[in-house]
Image 1: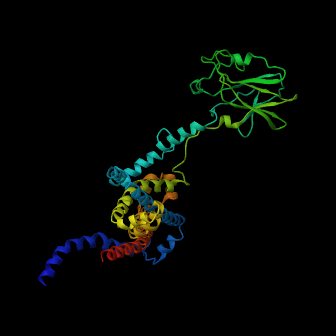
Image 2: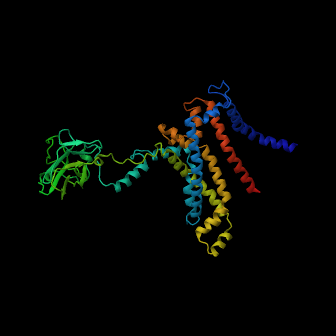
Image 3: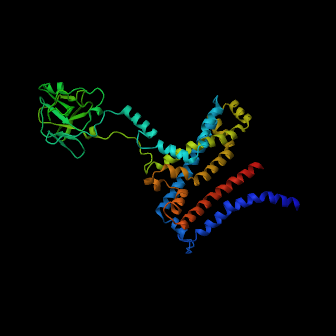
Length: 428
């Protein structure tokens, strides 16, 4: 009896903390979920019914399902692959430390970091800066998004943004196509003056012309005329059009000159396609409605991959080496050993890692709340963030928020029970 009393006295502080921090909040939340937003009117299961009627809450349920299926699966797979590969690396300990290091970063700090990395502005977001740089390597020609033609200068604009000559031209003609709206410092490197190209006469069997910036620094030039200091617009696509059909296409040179040869006699229109005036590529909208959830899951993977790798690596180090060596002696290759021996023997560890991650992703909050911008917060919301938004983030309906909390608890408890039973069986 005295021993039990002493044991109870030692356990009592932990029981008090458990009751104050776990039991009481759970009981209070269950009771609060049965009342309306004001907490005065009993509504029974009304809040639970509302959970499955509210579109925002249903989206949170769907997003949580995506998290539960995708994140633990990817993390367990990545952890397994990295754990196997690290065994063959000379500096395995340093590599494990490097991958495990993100676990030391708080979710708030990681969320802010990835919010900046995903920024759509290439000058701020490192991912879009890389995307724009790679895109620039394969871009066919520079665009002039601010370029436009002056009214009455012989060019008309179509609905698709293209410009074409107002009057038809024929082989043997030379046309000058002047544009404005381009700053001299925005011209491509190597752009040359267009005056020489504009002064050349076309041969009888060719259609020649020049596309130039109809602007002279200092404002001394003559409108509609190619002055000596006016630059050509290089690498601009030019088309010869007849009867609504493009019959020839070329690209302007460094001085803005172009020419078409081998054209049949007859009238043509010279056209500058809308692609010349398309806005520059600014990267990917990582935090847009379509990609915000995968983007946040990517941040979560960065944090937790080291955790999965270390746990699986610990299980891998405990595998019986004689079974692996026997398989190699029998002629099995590394893929067969991995698939038929390593993975089956690691199944208990993989299950524990997977279930632990399932429990963790069900209550993910920090990353979603910090990374998702306000306009797409609803597209990225999960049960934990929706519970906070409904209760304290403007909804002011703690009855519905408590119902969401109880629902989240009911979803987590089976996974926790499964994990506890697995631990007990492994100890036996």
